[in-house]
Length: 584
Image 1 (tube, rainbow, N blue to C red):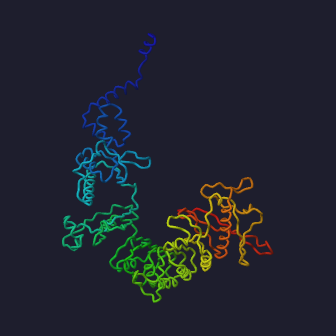
Image 2: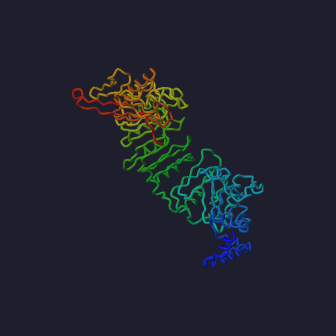
Image 3: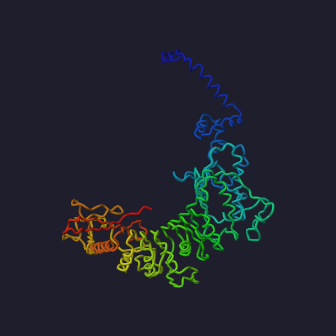
């Protein structure tokens, strides 16, 4: 032991250690013994929380400076309603300058930290979430929002070291405001809160007061490309004299928005107008509109569009009155209108074309007459509802060249039962008058998609995954039959239907077929017959409704063209039905 100790003492110290070791000791000792103000100023230049943590673990002296003043203030994540946080930063300017990243989260987020990996909670310095009744107390909800805005703005002014500011999204390119308050009149410079309240009640207009100017600011939302303003269906927060002043100010901040002259898609929901002149003038002033969705409510007046309005309209979703106004509006060129959605046939057959006073709506005769004149370009129709089969029959007679038809639901409980579905979305079997429907669809030679009517019986998914009967169609003599060359009720040579919902495929000689009950076999045969009738009556029909509502499935009719050399040169087309999922 003594020899090893002597060897350790005799070992020379490297020159590099001789130079650097005293310097490190003196530097560390000098840093630790600096005043707190100097240490605070040095740590101000360290942005990373990880680096701050490493410094704090070095010694207790640095730990006492890092954690109370820097580590907890580098990143703050809270809500706009966290007035206690904003008040703390306002009162402590030296702590507010230590904030590097501020993130405003949704009001519905829990106050706990780290709620889930993909859903971050609040992150604030310790002891700052205590509620202050003096700060939070208010008599009016609108006053509370104004107070939150003032405190947040004042706190931001004191965050001189802020480098990143995030408000629920890293890059705000699309904004959707769903609030009635955005349509309220603006408060002008020099107005008091009492005056603004009296003006909003309809006792005068602030814009007409002399000497009042509107506060404007330069454009700041340069990345914004899409903005949507929507009013709610309820009347809370609505003003008696709506104003677009707030919206105009917001649009002024978005310099890179597509100008209204280039507006090609417009959706207006819950639109309430005293007269129809305002929406008519607005639609006439935007000739580049191609897709229009407008909801003006039940008690709105009938709109009358100026001549030449909406010359490029391709798709419209609106009530029957608005669509009729578009159809009867003359245009220099043929309007490329292809799709009509969102209307219903009321069953009013007032032949004189007058407005029905009880419903303040145009009659079906007037609407269908205008629809027939524009039927050369229409390819898709989606109804909301109808009453009688005669309504659908008159509709198909006007637009015989459509490719997509969705009749919606039959209005009334009796009608819902006859179309094969109840209100809860379960199945009641196929439509009762299937022959009448097939005869009606035969008047649409270009029809490829039909929705709103159920034609097929309910079959278990395990049975659907098995091979099924295939119907053969002979176009020469317009006869349909079921091909079943084997003695088995389910032909082993038929083409299989792909399994749905994870059902295992049972097609193949090495696999056993599932046990099929007599009722399931009967339904399969009936479905094969129905598929044959639909393929015979509608040569281009490819998709109809599934027997389950809201399942995301459809029934596809697949045609297998046969060999023309079979049976003395007469070709046969085999049709089978398949259950497929629809992408949403």
